[in-house]
Image (cartoon, rainbow, N blue to C red):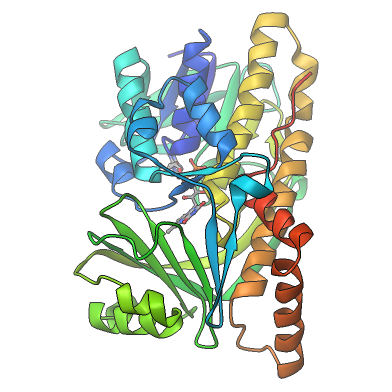
Length: 394
Ligand SMILES: Cc1cc2nc3c(=O)[nH]c(=O)nc-3n(C[C@H](O)[C@H](O)[C@H](O)COP(=O)(O)OP(=O)(O)OC[C@H]3O[C@@H](n4cnc5c(N)ncnc54)[C@H](O)[C@@H]3O)c2cc1C
């Protein structure tokens, strides 16, 4: 088999890159380890930055998002009972975010790819990139008991944090930056109306809580829990009681509870690998970086990497600009590190750290108060939350 761009992974990064390339007439094949149903079963992100919304529109997959997604002009901070509104739209000159689940984005991208007749090979095992430093890279994999080889011009490693692409780069080439947090997020999805029109990020002495949502009838709530917590120890009733204890009283009183339809614990981690490319292979999205979800940045960073790689490949194929290829990593990393910083800051400000002494807690409280009580501070939070601009590829 032969294609122009071989994409490893059919998560949002791989599917969005594939859709943009296909729209530009650049041939690509996606190789995915799991089944399509398994990929669609993962409950993950739900807040899309303006840049990602625009990119989905550019890719021609925004019809359902524009009809069903919820545009949010702001969000709420609940700081030990006190509520502060962050007016995203007013503070950023009109920018907003879109609440539309990652599962739905993935479903729309899969449908568009099937309709376009572009090839995705699911349930492929032992995927392995080869000869990335040469002009003739290729992938090998197994499917339906047979061994396959896919020759290509370029490889996009869109295979997430545990994927094979990053692991195929020699260790001495990569520099890893990592912070593992001493807590995780216990998440519950429920078919109940959201407690508030906008998202609520709650800082409380019992720990952080987030009231998020997927639609007008489906809510997603999170609680900070110790890193070694077991999901089996959390009945629905215990979850709702703890959430109410961490919310300001008016919100706790109007919280509608119901049976959970999904409950899981996600660890919190900051991770970046440099560089994000190795010869003709490019790392995209979670394959290259992870953020704690407090800033709603993971999926959005994947989208900005996709935009950068797509715009470079477009110029390579239409204008012969192969000189741009080596700029991929530096362009991505500039934006990645800013999002890493914001995600770390939001996490540091809003969570309870087990080893934090009383002095550190007062400093955190006062830093947060300084930010939310000043227009400049709220503007800083708002412009990072709606997403920093994508860098143009000239
Ligand atoms: C539990 C959880 C909750 C999250 N919540 C949020 C949130 O609230 N907000 C937010 O912004 N972000 C959140 N994120 C992060 C966000 O979901 C990711 O940033 C996003 O999925 C990245 O997309 P991706 O396509 O780069 O990687 P992925 O979505 O991980 O997709 C990678 C794909 O590659 C496939 N793959 C892996 N290895 C191989 C292989 N060897 N061969 C072939 N295919 C392979 C995988 O099966 C997968 O389909 C969350 C992540 C997790 C894990």
